[in-house]
Image (cartoon, rainbow, N blue to C red):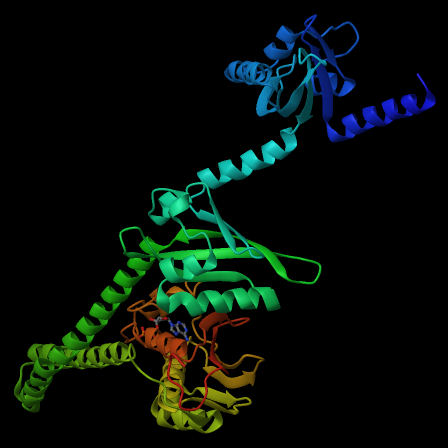
Length: 489
Ligand code: ADP
């Protein structure tokens, strides 16, 4: 062997090892088989002490694949054709490897078949990736798409067709034009285009909710997310994404919205209807009450209880109505001087303030854009509660507001009974009253009204314990509200 030959032998071995390939030659005349070192490695067999033969080579293929391999080779020999197949071999230790084999027949000058020459490549890692992807796609409840942006080709994987209401993935859109014109709801085209542009140019997350046409012509809601791959110049060359049905979610949401609005309408109608007979009861009670002095003491007591209950009910109906009307309310935004309105509210509550000997302090209270009437309702409720739920100590109340990046935050601090741990969230629910409210009048609607008003202002309302004793209520008002804004603005 010359040096050059030796060198090329070495290079060949290296190439085979690195590329996980091997070559073989089957001498048809004497039925002998040669395997290169690479073939031994792929088969997981030590070359020392093993002489390959055709039967052993065919036996290496797993049972399901063996017959195909044999047929392929026979066909190649009989028809003098090149061959190529992708099959699985089983190593002596039981490990399965995926291989691609290809080759050709070699003939002598008389066109007599001499041998078959082949190359085998171990493609197990690639195959496992593919299998993983396919299995994930099959196991996923989402349709998966792969868009070759350069050639505008869409590929759908796994159970995409089934998920999107079609018989086969071939029926799904194959180009973006197909997708836009034949599948996407016309009203959602802009959402998709904008989402893609923002993803490509600003790397914003692509996540849209869109309607897709099913085979039967109906539309179904999907949530679609995707990620692009970019070339060295920042141009998107490939986008892979998923499409998950959110039809059930949408339907549930619509039902919920409908039943909420039915409930609001019902509350509003019921409150309206209750007001009239309630007014009659209150008027008659007032008339009867005029001759209270002539009544026996026990009847007088019952009478007073009746008047109190009618008053309470009337108040509750008013609050219910106020709550219900906030549902479709629009905001009337203007520049509101929080200092002025807070002090005016405090003056209006002077009877309770004086009776409880409350001391009220004020911090910074800037002028901010909000709905004056509604924010007054919130502050009034919070102030009344701070006095109502006082402890045995003299009430110390402090009201202030501060500016933050995105919102203003109003705070009212008291040294009252406080809210037991874990109950801070529930008090904003309708009709929720805590044990501390047992001997104090109320309906449990006030804080629910506050929350709804704060929601309209795109803010949050919450309570935290005051160090030592009492509660601190906070609510925020978004700075995203502009003058003349309504709640959707
Ligand atoms: P109401 O005062 O009519 O009962 P609210 O909705 O205003 O209803 O308040 C709900 C409940 O939250 C009250 O019943 C009370 O238990 C509790 N609460 C509200 N404000 C305070 C406060 N400042 N301190 C302690 N508990 C409070």
